[in-house]
Amino acid sequence: MKYRKNILGLIVMLLAGATASGQGMLEKGLKADKQGLDGLAETYYRQAADTNAEARMRLGLLLERQEHFAEAARWLAQGDTTALAMTHLAACHAEQRHWSEARRAAEKAVELSAEGDSSLRASAMATLGLTHCVERNYTNALSWVNRALQQDPQSARALNVKGIIQFYRGQDQEATQTFRKALQVDPKNIDAHFNLGSMYCYRNSYDLAISTLKKGLKVERGSIKLIYCLGWAYLLKGETQGAIECLEEVISRDSSYVDAYNRLGDIYFSRAEYNRAIAYYRTATRIDPKGSEAYSLLGRTYAEQGELGKALRNYQRATELNKQDAETYCRLAELYEKQKQPKKVRSSYQKAARLGHAGAQKWCTERGIAY
Image (cartoon, rainbow, N blue to C red; front, top):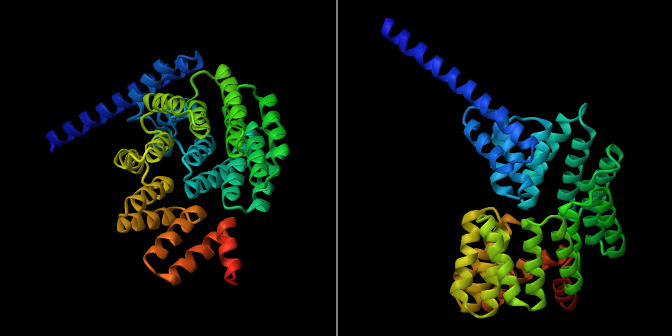
């Protein structure tokens, strides 16, 4: 009995020592963080992370600043459940397009920040607006963004989300003005540079996208998001070598950056190097099993090779993960046509048409099919 008490006492002492040590590492990390010594701060936070919840949260915040969103989300989810942690966790989930998780975290952040920091509350509300925007529920999206801007009229995040909503609705001029306003509020805001560059890419203004992104990289030289978007702009413009260099640089900075693997896969798909494309897409699915895009791209590649069974499984997985993916529903319809399954062809085109896909709507209209 005495022996057991001694052992228990020793365990308590060891735990107390570990906690004290963790607190000491946290304090050193906070000091280094304040001085802008990110590498040193990260080292201290990691040393404290096993025993200190605040250290886990601070590590997550630091990794988010470095644009390592997947790892940041893991640490933030294990840290203190505070308005600060939940607001940034929501943003990291949104960066990975994990919309249901982003919404849950943002709702929790709004609840926790009810009597707290208005800028945090505004950021969480903006993320909620973004989750509604991707579902094309623009009324709710704008409602949340307007509430965010009432909380904090200088919220760069809320302005960025407002610009995204305007872009989704085809209001390019208004979106451009809103993104530029976000840059006036915060000239170093990576999201505003990224959103402007992305908008120009979607509108086929590749030279304008490239110049915008290069301008952003002069302000934030190491931004992984901006380097990625620059690579995407080069890819769309047909400057493949520039695209490969940018995308490989992204992976060298963050080996879990899923979009870079998908774009590299696209390059090799366009060259008919299908096995190499598949390798990149599979890597993307391993890194992010919840990401729908890589599954859709795998389906496209297998369909091109004539492996219709594998194509079907991957398309179905993509639509399970993202029920808003009109393009993949159209690809499914094309696959079902090859397999002579007219009912499934019709159903897939109807789903795509309801999501606003012009080609699917035309297909349904020509056949007198309601959607």
